[in-house]
Image 1 (cartoon, rainbow, N blue to C red):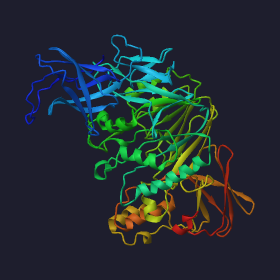
Image 2: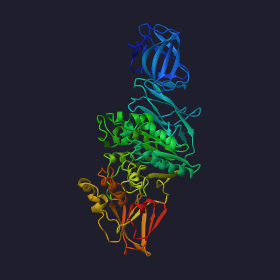
Image 3: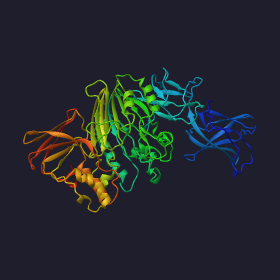
Image 4: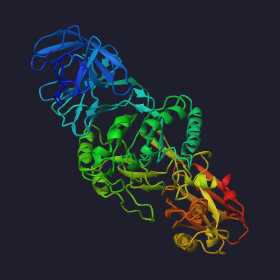
Amino acid sequence: MLSTLVLANSCRGEQDSVETFDVDFVLPASADMLENGTFTFQVKDGKAPLTSDVIVLESSGTGISYVCPVVSSSSTEFTVQVASGIPEGSYTVYVKRGNEKKPCGTIYIRIIEDIGFIPDEGFNIYGQVRCGDEGVAGVVVSDGAEVTVTDESGYYQLASEKGQGTVFMSVPSGYEALSDGIVPQFFGKLAGSSEDVEQINFNLVKSDNQDYTLLVLGDMHLADRSNTHDRTQFRRFTDDLNEFRAANPGRKIYALTLGDMTWDLYWIDNSYAFPEYIEDMNEFIEGDLQVYHTIGNHDHSMDGVGDFSKTSQYRTYLGPEYYSFNIGNYHYVVLDDIDFMENISDRDNYVEDVSSAQLEWLSKDLEHVGTDTPVILATHAPLYKDNSLNPEYRLVNAAQLVAALEGRKVHILTGHTHRMLNVDKIGSADAGHFEHNAGAVCADWWWSYTESGIHISTDGAPGGYSVFEISGDDIRWRYKATDFSDSYQFRTYDLNNVNITYDYVSNADDDHKATFAKYVSAYPANSDNEVLVNIWNWDPEWSLSVTEDGRELGWEQVVAYDPLHIIAYTAKRLDKNRTATFPTQRNNHFFKVRASSPSSTLTIKVTDRFGNIFTEEMERPKAFDISTYLDE
């Protein structure tokens, strides 16, 4: 029987114990125990228990006790029958004799199976990937450093340093992992050191998933805050998502988050962390939905020092920080590009990059993926900046990441900014990358809806989620604003009526008015008959047509502040002499057109790269106030 000996604790009792018997044995910090099997402990100094004694294991999580009878005992070792139905977890160990209990310390128990496979010498992680009773061959398994493939019987083994704390399978195409609620169980947590041998098995079910929908969920920032009622607002999003799924019965639908599901500041203050997030997702989302996760900066613990410590809670509940899986023809890779490095404790002092360890793992992972296989890569922080017409790299080592993907066609999904940006470096080529900075579920951290009833991000994009429709290699995408139809893809402003003045912050003090000055400068009184169009999911293959009395008008792409976000959030916060923590930001998905008259009706037609047409008959003058856009 395999056991994990990490710390040799002696069972000598505690000072306040009342036992009168003397038993002492080596208690491993963690151990693999065979389901319905036996386990043998090593006796110290000949102080063995009696065969009439029992070992009591009290769960540290639930408080439930499991009784393991002593079935044999000698001066050197004793064996217990493992209690039936005992789950994996941490336990306090007692020796019980009659009415007395002797406390002996704690142990982490992993329940293993007799799978008919013994790992070779030097391999310390092993197991089987199976579908039903059959092993599945050719499945990639990794510990985040080493990568292997299951044999013809579904067995695998790894010689691991266990530096990442988990082992995971890259779920193969045509299968799904089993799920615990929304969380797919493609990973196992490691309890022992590199000296210990651990068994981790994975289970699959067959799935016809060549044609499916992927829901891409940007920043949520759930925290149970009373000032924004974020969980109540979140129900509006999940209701929208449920309606979308109900409108597509029989369709395979998966979800992928882009990080910041939670908000580290409120893990303790509001007792809202990963368990509460998972509970809300399981309660609010109707039916079964597998949700793969990406880690964000706010999903790192405030208390940890260094990246591994700060990600421990995430690993416990959602799995490894980086991993891969397959759905249909696409190979998915999820990376952690929020790098606290080894000695950083400050929650805001991180670097946006992909660590060298991840790049090394990525190279090994992609060795098992043909270059003609399309890839979807998810990270939290984006590769590109969004404040110019020619976006430059934002990620510190973006060039290295792009080089690792060379020769492949890759769609990169990112969040973090709560803004939208598309950067197409594929075009008509067979390889390259396309970044979709895909917006935020929470828009501007749930604040704008609280202030004005309009759920809007700092670039003017509505809060919502991206929808990717995938069939074979074909991939199509669109943005779905919460509470709006699919046709809501842009917003128009009559700049003759957009005059941002200090009247919007009349109650603000001088410091807060100074903060507002750049918006006043951006939108002075204007009688040039200009119209501003915000097309948040724009990319170079989209087109814009604006006609006035049948005459086509020219347009110019510009970098701008969204006027509605200025008055819906930023001005309202500053007017209360409060910090506009998430102020209106400049972005490049704006377009300016000049009409010949202040009162002409403009026909605005926006066509996406897939030929979908979205139109507005813009009657002018068009008012600029909150009420105009509330029911748009």
